[in-house]
Length: 372
Image (tube, rainbow, N blue to C red; front, side, top):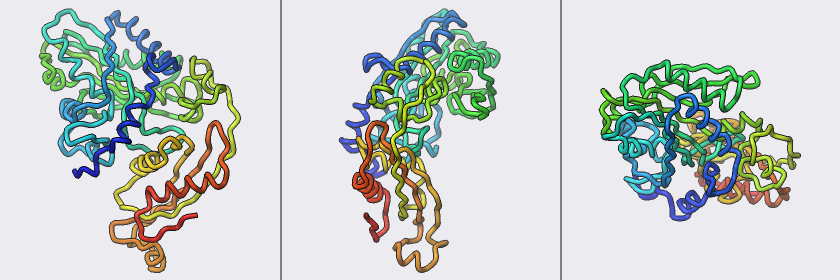
């Protein structure tokens, strides 16, 4: 990995100054109310103690990957998906990165049945649409027990309790899933408005994760669950666009203080721009989305969606198109549709064109520029 793959000072500063909606110290938000409801439900069921862990999002790569059982060649480690600060330090890609160190504190203790609550921001490369952001909020909920007999029955009970706290009365299913830090992993899907949607993933804590934190798996066990809080809150309130969670329009802000159902706010008109760009064939919607957000900076919330309309490899392009675009082997031609729709202001045509050009310059790697 070269130094060009590391975050710049400006990128790191922007990430660290982003408001954490799970943190009461940053102001009140409905996300906190939802999390409180989940924690209360689980604590009441288990009659356990509760421990909240809130740490810096800057973590050693070892904590984010190695200690959780990720292999050295796991694709998630690739710089295209991970925000590295250096070869050994990164912005966490999940709040699970804070768990293994927290588990070390239980060594030597007895009679433990505790719910670890680890909320905060995670930092990823992700697609641009109404349901995804590059800095999602996540919570890890781990039940830690000084007994080796936590079983699948306890896991299923935890799933039922969680779903009922987030979406009371909702039908759910749990299917097998593989995570390096669990055994008996499950993906939790809920049936919402006729759709099957992923809510969380969970499993029993892997013995090697316990052992790596100084806890003997012959004496300790527990449950590990991770949930994306944007998805959970949007489902609970019926919010149609993830950008509303951070919007500054007073009509929206007032609705982000409670778990009451979402009330429609009139949308401003959209501006649509189509782009034909040339870029490396390895780029995908997640890395593309990250490049666009980075380029726009504070204006990134203006983007409603980025859709890939077509993807054509260099070898599949007509000769005339190759000549016009200047593509090379290993590159592709993408036709992108960018929808710009601010939540709280109207864009002029000139402003929309300027943003279109900023996006174009950020993603286009061909020799021929087509600016407007």
